[in-house]
Image 1 (cartoon, chains in turn brown, green):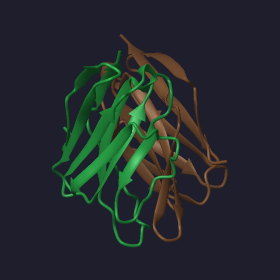
Image 2: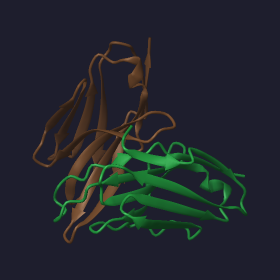
Image 3: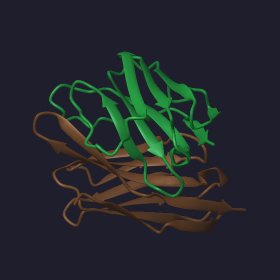
Image 4: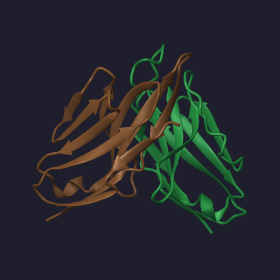
Length: 115
Length: 117
């Protein structure tokens, strides 16, 4: 069964600190993995997207890693800011011959950054 | 702004009403999606309009009816909804490349917060 599990469910950190969010998946055949940031009441915004051959990708203070062997990904946030408070969603895409893609969403990690 | 707009942003309707949600993308994409987001649950893909994707979600009830008149506009028609249909409904779009091997990043709209009384 294709699944995406994220941990922790929620996290509270102080402004300026670093944190790491985890994503484990059992999706096959794997196509790509994406991290989204979703502010409360708004649509998700893409942070990174990685294919099988990529093991790290950065977007400003956000750095995502991918280990396709262990089927794990992490999102590291450096020098957190109050505006980082949001839900972070891991999405894994499975690709099937014939052009059929299926997206499997994790439940998200809710991050709160406190001053 | 992501280039994907949705109207209305908030909607309250009774169980006997008929309403429609609208989505418009200004990114030149050729695929559009409807998602449902309930509290504390993962995003649920409802419908896809694309030449290269189809949705494996037979659990969407028939009281939700999508319409895609062209590649820039997407509608979700609602009728005789239930209170459990209250959720955030998100529209997304992407550029589909031939062959399907290129990562298809999706851009999301702000969502419509739907409340069914």
